[in-house]
Each structure stands twice: as C-alpha cells, then as structure tokens.
Image (cartoon, rainbow, N blue to C red; front, top):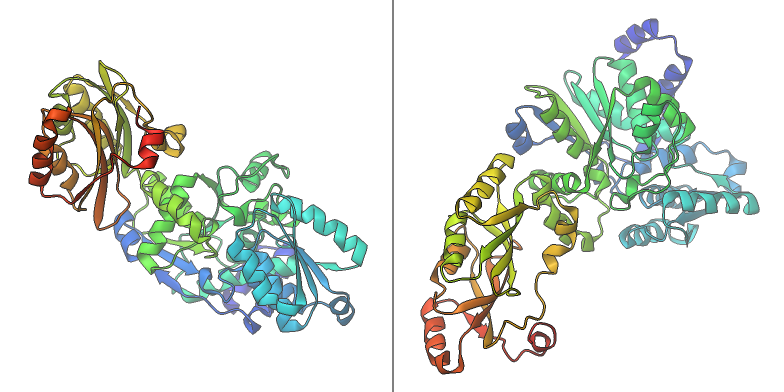
Amino acid sequence: MTALLATRAQADDSPADLDLLRRTLAARVYEVARETPLEPAALLSARFGNRVLLKREDLQPVFSFKLRGAYNKMAALSAAERASGVIAASAGNHAQGVALAAAKLGIRAVIVMPMTAPQVKVDAVRRFGGEFVEVLLTGDSYSDAQAAAARIEAERGLVFVHPFDDIDVIAGQATVGMELLRQLPTAPDAVLVPVGGGGLLAGIAGYIKTLSPQTKVIGVQAADSDAMACSLETGVRVALPEVGLFADGTAVKQVGALTFELCSRHVDAMLRVDGDAICAAIRDVYQETRSVPEPSGALALAGLKQYATTHELRDATLVAIVSGANMNFERLRFVAERAEAGEQREALFAVTIPEERGSFRRFCDALGRRSITEFNYRIGDARQAHIFVGVQTASRDERAAVVAAFRAQDFAVLDLSDDELAKLHLRHMVGGRSPLAQDERLYRFDFPERPGALPDFLAQLHPDWNISLFHYRNHGADQGRILVGIQAPADEQAALQSFLESLGYPHCDESDNAAYRLLLRS
C-alpha cells in the first residue's frame, strides 16, 4: 500500500484526495464496525462469465455500512461538542449508526426520521440507542427529515451529524473501498456502489481512484431517485421535486456539495435501475448468500448485472457493494412478485379467444408445456373470452414465441410484460359479477406444484361444461391452488360431481361462500 500511495501521490497533486486518503487510513471505524467479507457469487459469476464478488456490508452490527461514517464522525467530536449532544436526519440506516455510536460513546442524540421509514429501522434505532436516543418522525423523505433536523439543531444548540456530506463521514465510508482493495490480490476491474446522497460513492471512489486509477468506480441509483446521476450529467447539484420510496435508503432529493465535488472528479459512470431490476437483484443476493438485502442494499448488484450485459464483459472482476439488509418483512411479497419481471423470466399476456367449445383447448395447446405463473379469467362476453395469463420465460425471444403461438391459433394477444398498470393492478382485478354466469358452481382445487401440473389440470377439464371463472397464481408453494367456476344445469349436477371425483385432485365446493355470493355471483 505504501508503494501505491507514493506512486499515486507523485502523479496527483490534489490536496483534497490526499486528505481523504489520510483520514481514511486513520478512521476509527473498527471500534464498532467489522471488516466485512468479500464473497464470491458463484451463480452470478457462471451466469455472466465474470468474477462477481459481493462486499457484505449487510453483515455490520447495524446491518448497514452507515455505522462506519457515523461513528468516525462522532468519535472525532471535541469534549464540548459531545456535551452539547448531536442530531441526525436519516431514512433509517444512518440513524442506526448514530444510535449505536451514541450509546457506545455516551453522547445524547436526537434522530429525525421520515414517517415513511420502515418500522424495522425505527425499532432498531430505539434498540441500539436506548436511553441516549430520542427519535422524532416527520415528513415523507430524508429531505423533509433534514429540514426538521436543521430547525431543531438551531433551537437546541446540537451538533449535526450529516449522513453523507461531511469529510469524516465520507472517510468512514471510504474504509469499505480500503478493505476490498486489501482483500483482493489484484485490483478489480470495476466496483459498483449504491448512491443516495453520495457519501459511500464519494468515499470509495476517492480512495480507490487514488490507489487504483484503472479501476472503474460506478454509481447505481434507483431510476426514481437519481439525484446524483442528474447532477453529474448537468454539472450542477440538481434538487429532485420528488423521490421514489421503494429504495428508501437512497431516497435523497439533493446530493451533498462535498460528495458531488468528489464524485465529479472520481466517478467513471452512473447507472439507473428500475424497481423490477432491484427485486431481481434481491433474489440474486438471497440465492448466493441466503441473506435478504433491502432494496438499496441490492442496487449495486442490479447495476452490475446491467453493466456486465450492456458492455458484454467477459473474465472481468466486478465488485458490488451489498450495502444493507434492513428489510421490512412485509415488502417481501412485492419483491417476490416483481423479481421474475426484473429478470424477464415472466411474461404477461392478455389473450382474446372465441367464447365457443374447443377454444379453451386450443388455448392450452398454444401454451404447450410451459410453466404458467398466473391464469385469470371471468366470463363477461357471450362472443369472446379475455384471459390474463403469465408464462415463465427465459428471454424476450421466448416472449415473442409465445405471442406467435397464440396468433397461430388466430387469438388476439397483447404482451403486457412491460405494462406497469397490468403488473401492479390489472392482474388482481380480473373478475367481478357477470350476468352470463348462470348455473355457475365454484370450486377450489389443490394440486402438486410441479412443471406441467397446471396444463395437465386444464387438459382434463370436461368440454361439455363451460368454464366461467378461473384464477391461479404460482406463489412458490408446494401446493398449487386454483379457483374455477363451472356452468352446469341443475339436472347435470350428479354428472358434474362424478367428473370432479374422477379428476383425482382435492377440491372444495365454494358455491355458497358468502364473499363469492357478494362479489362475484349475479
């Protein structure tokens, strides 16, 4: 490291870079933080043909890198500043770092958090800080919390511990870059870093580009919270009017002045990723580590995948910073739902078929043995049936093949795979009352969830009775569950029961269910 420092110092006369380097080397982070592992991601490496490594900052005591900068800043306070107490604004992870540092150093802290902060983070702040911390909830974003904290700072004479725009905080975060260079025999080709206000990116970029200028340092932001990307593109700090809240840990309307200056000089590129890509990256981290990062914690990996694909990289060493794991459990349902879309592994279609005997069988033939992820239908037109179907796919090419198979049967089809309205809402709204559903009986079926099981079930449905309602969604369980409406006149009920028994699937008659009668039955 000394040789690298000497070589770089001769080539770069920036006092600011050398000051950051000195502060990083002297940072007191290891009084509370740990040196996190740099773990190979075997599945992703094989998939992308590169050496993919995950820097596991989600393994810190507060499950986030933020402890490094917060503690380094607070440990450097004078005795008078410590006696005054500190104040911080945070969406959650910085708050936890400040809380733990406050308890460790015996400093009183007021922590202002937006009301949208995940409850898991709010609870953790109170737990880590104990009697030393007062938590105030206000506003909808970090910027709202920051404005409130500025008022309280002036009123109470507290010391503000900035989450990113402070040289000691940045130096604390830079120790992540210091570690990963030390953990590799040769410098990586690229390091991808999640970005909110820019403290982590500024620290890592400043440190790595000083010692390893050939390494690309790339920031990754959520597409709806891209303040740093917009700022670097325009050359001035941009204030976003609104930010997305899914990746709440990086939901910052305006980056810091110091972080912007450092990133302007050292960051090679910025990438934007959408929510589906973030969800897919969360799943990737889980598959590699059996840990679940929060959305902001998976940002860098989402960007790494985009970067490797776009640039067609091969045999490169790529590092993604897994920055945090403070995930609200309730978000997992959404993540699982959207991860398939993020990998282009689920295609959604609206298919129109004639409402006549034989059409449903031709529809099943078009699907073939493909794994069906979702199937929604409710009779609503005497001439046409509109079906919402999800199909597991491997690529956009396969999506096109499914469309071609439907059109070969003369079915009208819409590819809804990139339609946000369909993915978020319409898939859950197929149904309702129908005047055409006379003599309808409603049944729930269970069947073993295995490839081809749903097509097998569909193939066995009797052609003499019309299907008036169908709902299925693959939730990854061992048992698939289907709701089916079958129209059979009263004098054919005995035959219908015999047919149901012959299917061999456990089933339950829900025709007298109160909710069904209220919401679906005419």
